[in-house]
Structure formats: C-alpha cells, structure tokens
Length: 207
Length: 383
Image (tube, rainbow over all chains, first blue to last red; front, side, top):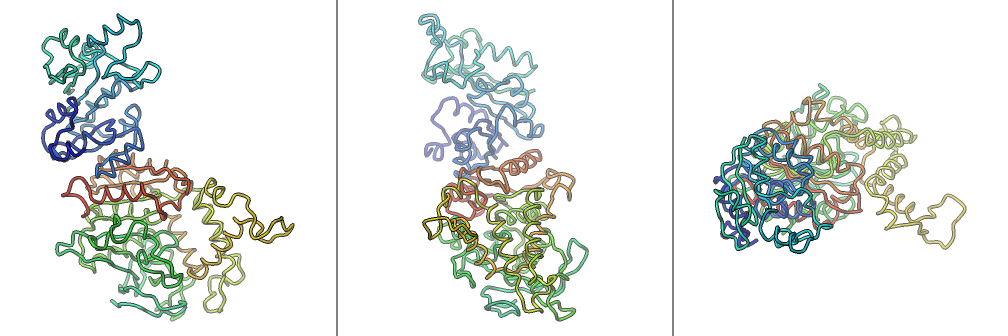
C-alpha cells in the first residue's frame, strides 16, 4: 500500500502496466477493484478521478475507508446502471474469466468507457499447457493458484481466444501486452508466440 | 440571534445553545410560518475560507445537542460516537453545525410554541411541515452563518432524508453528502408504524384534541406507547434476543398477571417513560408526518432526476439488520446516483443492532466516514 502511495506503483506487473496505459487525470472505473490497490495508485499517482465496483462488501468498506469512491456490485449485473461513455477508461483486471457472461461484460465495458482495459491470465501459457499434458489434471500455477473445485474462474481463455472475441465484437485492440512469469513485457506482435510465452495479458480496447 | 440558555414557555427548563429568528419561512403546504426560531449548536472554528463547515441533521427524536450534554436527560451528545475530538467529524478541524428541526420541541419553532397571531400555543393549528421545509430553514441558518458551501451534510434516518433533500435542492452548496440508514421515500410499512404511534397519542384522553398545553395535561401514556412501538422498529429480532431473550425482570417466576414479567417489557416501559420527559407529543405527530410525506421521486419525477448533473460526492451507508430502512432502499438510491454518473460510495455494514446502529459504536462506520470525509482526492475532501 505504501509503495502505491509514494511511487504511484502497485508492485504488480499487470497493474503497473494498466497504470501506464491510463492518461493522467482521466475518469476511471475499476470493475472488481478488490481492496482498492490499483484505484489508489490511479488517484494518487496519476491524478485520476477514480471510481470502483467491487463484489465483496469487505473490499468495498476497506476501499472507502481509504478515501476511495467504491460501491458494492457485481460485474455481471450492475454495469447496466452506468451511463454510456461516462468514463475515459473502464478497467477489468483479472476478473473477466470469473464472470458468468464475459461477452456481455466486455460489451458493457466499451459502452461505459471510451476505452476498456482488460487483463487476464492466459490459459494458453506453456506451463498451463504442459501441466495439463503431463499430469492430466487441471493446471494449478502462480497465475491460476486454485484447484478446479475452488476456483472462481469459470470462463478461462487464451490470449488468442480473447482476441477472437474482440474481433467478433468488432472492437479495436489499441494495445495488447503479454508478460511472462518473470514480469517481462512483450507487445503482442506474434499472437502465436505470446499465446505460448505470455502468462498474463493486458488489452486496451475501444468500440 | 440569541446565545442561550433561553427560557421558553412550556419547556421544563432553559435551553443552552444558540437561537436565530427568521422573520418568515415559506412552507411546502403554501402557508408561511412567521417569527421562526431555529435552535442550533456550533462547535469548532469556521476557517477563513469557510471551507470546513459540516452540517449534521438529526433523526426523528434527535436534537441539536449532537456533542453537548443534553439539558434534560444529562446524557452526552447523541452522536459522540462519530462527532468529537479525534473523531471523523472533529471540532478541532471542522465547523460543526446542528440545528433542531422546525416542528421540533427543543427550541426550534414547533407546535409547543405560541402562535404570534393569537398568543396561544399552536397545537394542531401549527402548519404541517415537510423534510424540505426543515432543510429550507437550515439553509437560511447556513446563509446567516455566511457559509456558501458546506463541506459535508451528514445524517442518519430522518437526518439522512434531510441530507438527500439538501443535495437535491442545493447541489452547489453540498460538497459531500452522507445519507446513513435512510431512503428516498418513506415506505408503506414505515408510514404504518408512524400511524400506530400517532393513533396512540391521539387516543390518550390527556391529548385533548392537541390542546393539552392550555388544558394543563400531558398525553404521556399515548406518547410513551408511541415510543415503545417505534423503539422495537429501531432494533432487530436477534439483538432483542441477545439482549433480553425470555429473561424475567426481578422475579423467579411468571406473575400470571400483566406486570412487566419479562426484561424486554421493562426495558420498553423505561424507554417510553424517559422519552416523555424530553419530547412533546404534538411535535411527534408533526415530525412523523414530515417523514411520511418525503418522496424524492414524486417531487422530481425520479430519484435519478433529483440528482442529475450533481457534483456532490455521496457516501451511502446501510446496516445489514436494519429492517426499517433496509439495504435494498439504499441500493436503489445508489443505482439512481450511478445512473447520473454521480461520485458515489456505498457501504453496507454488518451488524445485528438494527436501525439504531447508526447511533452506536460501530468501528466500521467510523472508519468509512473518516476515510470518505478525508478523501483520497484532497482537493475535494472535507478537511
């Protein structure tokens, strides 16, 4: 927390990349904002006007106690309340794979925000592929730490799957960055390679 | 302006605090109230740029003694859990204003006062007032204090209704709004409970058609029953069970009579008795009526329309066990605010203490209020 306050960084590579993608002073909605780590860095470090939506009431109350504007709500049902294009960025970090209707949620993000930023774990990552191939069991990795019966992730996808969906929805992918387990970034020029070597990916999209 | 203590006819004792008299106040009913006295207290020092004023709105049976010892009950201020040195609302940092609502009975003009036109107590000739009328009077007070914009307006229950009315009627004068355990309209169930209370008062022969002051009587039994019924709605079944269960009061066996066998009965009787010492029966009728009439959507077309274009920051708070102003009503308010792209936070706090939780020690409420008022964005915080 203190790191975010003093440096405007979160200490998490995917969140720090999101910080870099957001223009200073922008209006930002962080969907699934947890305890407010990214939101705090956006407000303090980037001078953003930040709002959050979070499923867990404990996360909401913790965020509000930290001076952030957050309401309790569910990405699957409560995004409909937000007016069109009311934010510069609608961010969904590490949550799309846990929604019931990822396609609808993605549509809502680009409706509410002029840009959407989506980050997700890549199920095409080579360790995931290897784990399934070698053990014959659902992969458990650092990015996907829970067993199949515990995981909230009900709609896992690969980088290529997500880009296919974006194409299907007619979205413009303004930026796509994958990073490996060491946190090294690689812009997705070769989708095939990124889909193998990227453990996580962050996408900047618009309608 | 008068600095108290002020002795008023029909009051048990002189009231400390400050008193401002307005020549007149136009009311929603179309009537105009003359020589309107507003009883209020202030704490802290108004900053040179007047940016640190926080208005606190009290609930149905509350008053202006938010921080001071109550002149009648001798109890500490009713919101000393949240208001006080080093509390989220802090007289060392904020200029804190709290006024008795008009229609009330702690010094602001109400049915217990003398009608300047007749020289006799208003009683039921007092005009019916609304939440908007209460807020209009507060706005006049804030004007008189020379304050253009309030850093925050904060209140629970009926106080929360006033907070919402402030934000809807004077959006540019409210930087931050904290409506706690409240709703944008009084529900049918809540109107029903109020009606039970009013009928209890009016059924008391000592009420005398509302003219009990001149008759020299007091409808104490009716008012006590009204309070007892209302008090149940402020608690929760689990809290009553935890606090009292079926425990007997000062006895080992049932009396096979109608004494207060159970502790919960004795507790309610005590609540009723102590309430009549500090509250006026007609004021109870008028203030409950004002709550019943409150309906932001009816006034503006929809709740969203009431707040369209608002720049006020909102922090809506509800409590899990509050069945008088349940979370679902706060959530409707939050949805309406979201729909107009308002800056809104919403916290539901887990507690079994029911509606009254907003008046009690709730560490999470304190943390949330402190965080919200300080704000991450310093340019828009209340400090």
